[in-house]
Length: 227
Image 1: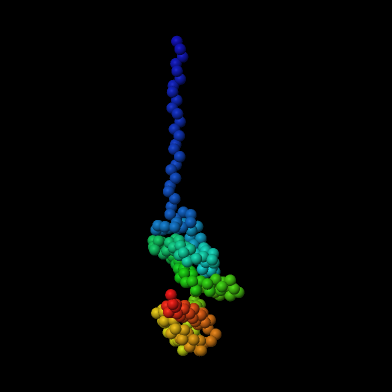
Image 2: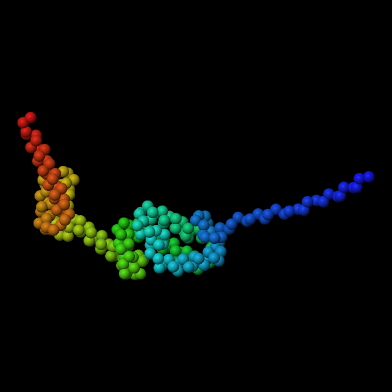
């Protein structure tokens, strides 16, 4: 009689691997989008460090840009950074210190964009932060705004003149140029130059107008030639 078969031994049950919980919105760096209900301790500390550091950075560093950034890059950087730190995303946070830190960072980001989006201010700012007064030129202030406006006024005066009568005749000449009254524009520009004989803009416009006068005279003469 053959020996009885050994009783079947059930295969050991192997527990399935634990299903990983979806990462919390507060895990790791602050996400780029979506509301934030809470921040973990590491994020709170990182934010506090950033809030303390951001006031020592120049506007390009705040937006993570090089000083050669063009307006399109500046705009894109502002949208990227402001989307991360916009206060509306952190409405449910209860820690007031964290909210203050967020406000500090966000304000600096918007301040950087406001300043750098202006071509004239940006050019001057690049020169300022590259000079010996860098530390005192990092932030936008009423003094820097007044200085910027003075620079704009100076450049405008250099463009249209500093003498009231010179400016008046120059503006008249520009209207005459617009209506293609070349001879009248020539007279107005010559008069403007009597008040500002060294004004390069006046001289440049006069040379251009005189060329037009010459072309008009030549065209008029050609009409009377025997064909």
